Length: 154
Image 1 (cartoon, rainbow, N blue to C red):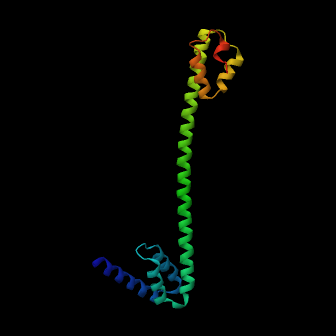
Image 2: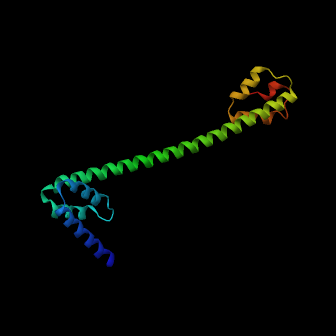
Image 3: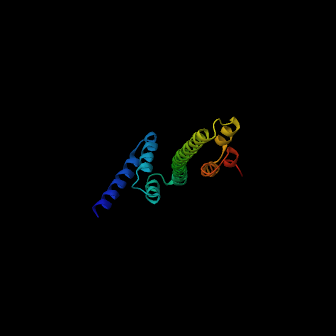
C-alpha cells in the first residue's frame, strides 16, 4: 500500500542520513528513530545494522533500557493517578458518611433535649462518639421510652 511504501522510503532516507551524518549528529538521529512510533524494534535493529553494525548490541541494549524506563514511568504515573482517584473517592465517601452521622447525632440530641431536658454532658458525649447503627437504634427507642435510661438500654 501507499502508506507502507512511504514508510520504507522514509526508513531508507534515515539510513542514508545516518550513514552520511557526522559522528556528533548520530545520537540525535538515533533519538529521532527511537521516538518515531511507526518503527518497531525489528525495524530499528535493521536501521542500526545498516548504519553501524558494530554498534547493534550496544544500541539495542540502550533502546531496551529506554523502553523499559518509559514503560515504568508510564506505569508509575497511571498507578499514581488511580491512587489519587481512589483516595478522592474514599475521602468523599468518608466525608458524606461522617456528615450523615453528625446529622443523625444532632437530630437525636435535639429530640432527647426536647423530651428529657436537660441532658447530662455524658449523654451528649456518648451520642457524638457512637456509630451510626447505635444512633439509629437509640432514635427508634425515643418514641416509646418513658425515661432517658430506656433510650440507652443495651
